[in-house]
Length: 95
Image (tube, rainbow, N blue to C red):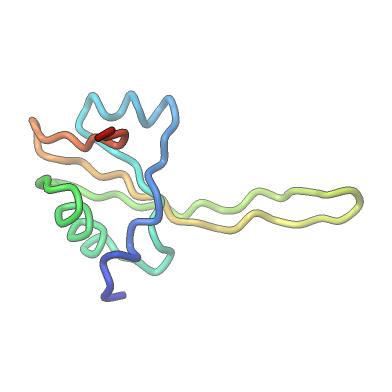
């Protein structure tokens, strides 16, 4: 994967990830075929911060049912990014 604009899909915003922001850690949904180096380059380029560590995990989709039909949500990849102390990523930047 070469195009950095397709690496980060969306930020993962939950109560737990909001608390991680106090420790300079942020969570993102990333492309399934993205590796740690690509995630680091994308975050540094788009948010202007210095990334110290990237941890990735594959999240399995949950089984769901609609009436008598069974289905699954899609599998996705999550990345926990640790930024340098003092750097912040404002996910709700209102202009």
